[in-house]
Amino acid sequence: MAVEAVDLVRTYDLGGVSVSALRGVSLTIAAGDYVAVVGPSGSGKSTLMHLLGGLDRPTSGRLVIGGRDVATLDAGELARLRNETIGFVFQSFHLLPRTSAVDNVALPLVYRGIGGRRRRELAAAMLGRVGLGHRLDHRPNQLSGGEQQRVAIARALVTDPVLLLADEPTGNLDSATGESVLTLLEELNADSGVALVLVTHDREVAGRAHRQVVMRDGAVVVPAAAEPGAETGPGSATVVPAARRRPEIVDPAPSAEPRRASGSDSGHPSGGSGGATGATGRRGVGDESPESAASAGSLGSAGSLGGAESAGSAESPGSAESPGSAESPGSAS
Ligand SMILES: Nc1ncnc2c1ncn2[C@@H]1O[C@H](COP(=O)(O)OP(=O)(O)OP(=O)(O)O)[C@@H](O)[C@H]1O
Ligand SMILES: [Mg+2]
Image (cartoon, rainbow, N blue to C red):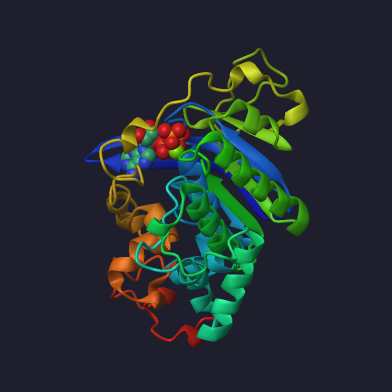
């Protein structure tokens, strides 16, 4: 089993105002699963993805990733678990801008203690698998949007994760390019057995998954044994098998991510969660934007490939427990 989540609650503290992003979500992702997460803007999809990927910690609830309860892990252990278990793909790619495709893909391998030459070999092979063997040395701005997303997918997969989390991976792509990216993700799911969890606003895309998780107001909607549109209370959320889903529950008017329009492409005010989680002793991954923790892109400013995928190195260099702050890649794993 890739992930088991029981009654996840995530509450943000915004200057004394409490924001309930998740109100008790339970969910199991099995090996090889293909799950679509759908729901209106603000319903908690990205928050859930960040938790499932170990980029953030729940305020309460039980979360087991790759057999390990995240509550028992310190920030460094969680970062390593992420590196070994999870691949992330985001709507806005999050690639290092001045770094070639092959080096972007090779970044997460720094923690595996793999030498530079071998890292590039593995990265080049993965780029070949996503159809970019001829674009190894192109930088992101020399690639099309679909190619950039394929680089991001290669980077997510180069570590051979058991779980691939994709948060609106086709949101910035035209429909034809989005289709090819989606097909690629589905092939990887079918061929490699990597579990795929995909956030999408596209009803047709969602219908291709093995099952759907329909979110609304921070909870999972359960239509099967209830009236259309009925919701569960916190704690009783479950998933919706595709065969039994009610398409009318899927948000018919997807938003254009209004919160992201103002600049930050993470959509999550960095540090907004840090104060609250820090105060309760949950430090580390909650201290910054979850997406910046997952993305090598945000670590470009650190100027060190060794910082790739670290939860803490760029923002908190003093964190001795972050694998990213260990200058020697060989010491990790
Ligand atoms: N860091 C944060 N601080 C405070 N509130 C937050 C933070 N991140 C998310 N929220 C709030 O939590 C709720 C869920 O946000 P989330 O990003 O998970 O929604 P979403 O379903 O992914 O929406 P979209 O479809 O627009 O991407 C929203 O009301 C949002 O404003
Ligand atoms: Mg979102």
